[in-house]
Image 1 (cartoon, rainbow, N blue to C red):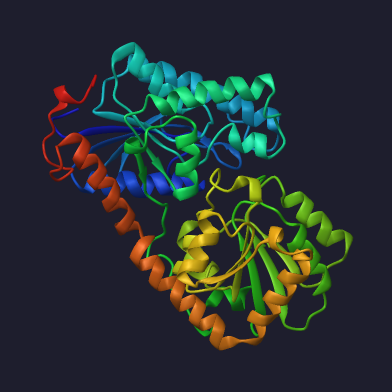
Image 2 (cartoon, helix red, strand yellow):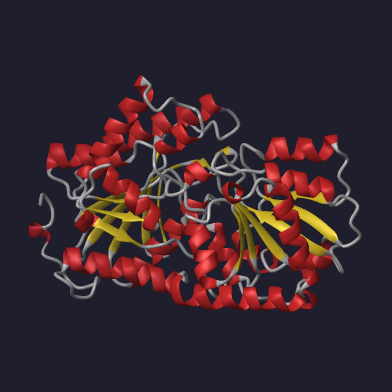
Amino acid sequence: MDDRPSILFINQHYWPDCAATALMLTDLAEYLAEQGVDVHVLCSRGHYLSGAMEVPAEETHNGVHIHRVRATAFGRETTLGRLTDYASFFASTLRRVLAGPAYDYIIPLTTPPLLPLVGAIARRVRGQAYGIWSMDLHPDAEVAAGMFAEDGLPARMLHALNNAGYRHADFVVDLGTYMKRRLRDKGVAGDRLHTIPVWNRKDDVTPLPHADNPLRTELGLEGKFVVMYSGNAGVAHRFEEVLATMKRLDGHPDIEFVFVGEGPKKYRIQSFADRHALSNFRYLPYFPREDLEHSLPMADVHLMTLREEMAGIAVPGKLYGIMAAGRPALMVGPEASEPGETIQISDAGRVVDPSQTDTPAQALQDTLLSLYRDDALRTALGQNGREAFLEHFEREVCCRKWASLFGSRLNGGSEVGASPQKEAVVGS
């Protein structure tokens, strides 16, 4: 390493992987490298979906030094395989961090769940300064999903370990107000918390008109009103109301439900559609990032869902791609959540809060049909979303906040790429 400020990010996934955290981290790491920071990433050789990936152990890509450790690569097909991958990557990462060079900061993300603890151990053993990029909260997510009992021994142990990682960090980057509140409840001091949302790229996804979108033609969607769910169908999401609405609107001559992606709830959704022989439904695999310019604007309305108990634990980043595409978001989930508030404040769509109605499936159907019938309303909501995206959730805007944070930490507020006072940082 040279005299430039040095940062090591740690996450299970990185370029060329397609995981959402890999995409965000790749954007940020390459941005900081462009600003003159000596950026390193420690990740696995596994692929988010399929397991193993043919990639070198060491390489430099777009100015970022990538270090890939050996770990199991069973993928996401089974819970046991996923947990084994988590444990293997954690152990390999800890060995590498404790035996490797010091950095001005190491920044673990939250995949796998105990990764923040690597920072706490490195501080204790060798005085390493560290921050945390909190993408999700664990084991909060597992407790909310019913995998652990809140007062059970596994949850208590995991809370204690993860909370120690958070409380000893020099700073924690959260994704919004609701996550910040939960982190404060874990004992993280308010002056160590910094809110920086995740993002999308303004030139990667634009409000492309349907007539100019070749993907609609390729998929036979000309003349269809496309209701899309794009992204992970995971434990943080609810689909009861969506499935009921799909069944009620089956056979509608115009409306087509298009799901894109993967996730643990994909099988349930696909099985429901097969069982009821839904004629206006299809499930497509993930599109490569370079194809998002066509896939996201392909929709007329984008569906989002979030379980009420997940507010502040998981913050679906898919909203910002929807806003970038200039399409209205239709969310089933709590109004009192990061995406719920963003949609309402920006007037970028509609929120159906199941806790506010006795018939949430009917409310979703009614709201969807009102958007279907009102072209002008959809256009206005989409424009509102695009404007809010450009102001608050665009890559350059959010990465500048990261650069400012590092500048204040490394250089006393000067430009992030300027020469730091390393001796005042490492071991602080």
